[in-house]
Length: 264
Image (cartoon, rainbow, N blue to C red; front, top):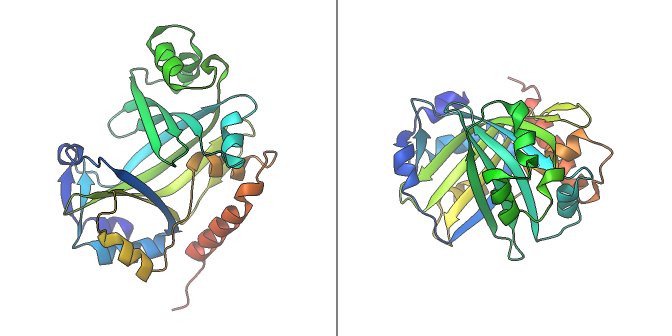
């Protein structure tokens, strides 16, 4: 059903997408279920185009996160610190591209992302690259990261599939993530977020947004969702989770509704 829906959209190429510069970007996240997403896509079809790369519209992603041994980056988010960082390797599975990324959120809630290309495909070698005390990766991390990168360890990985939409006025992008799964490197716990959908609206300042009215119609409200923090909280019960508990309960309810049998 989902793949049938996205086939109804006019395509836009990756090259065309790269020309869309959101210079005064604001980001808003929403969380919903696959059945509601299918309805949203039906309503949005006339206003948006879907990114297509080599005929692929539902693109697979893989991410490996790093943190300090005591999970200082996770704890900073859990404790509500506005000025915080995350470090990850993001892999675009279909194209075989891998990027080491440092994401920094400032006191104004703006997110700044810096990244460098990794030429090593073997995931087993990525921790050694991150911990290396010399070379280009060392220089990149020393300049961008507030933590001692030589002490960082892999904490959790995820995989998901992403749909990317752009409105026809080219003032916003919409990323839609489904089939999200986590594997925690510390606890070895696996968690499939069955039926869950994470939507992120990235728009140019306060430009009019066709999708916002549709989201309101479907009662899809803004809902914070950090893949790193939610993944860690759902797969490691030994971590402090007070700040996330209500959000986690909300996510559990959405997944239950998404997978509940329907009466015909």
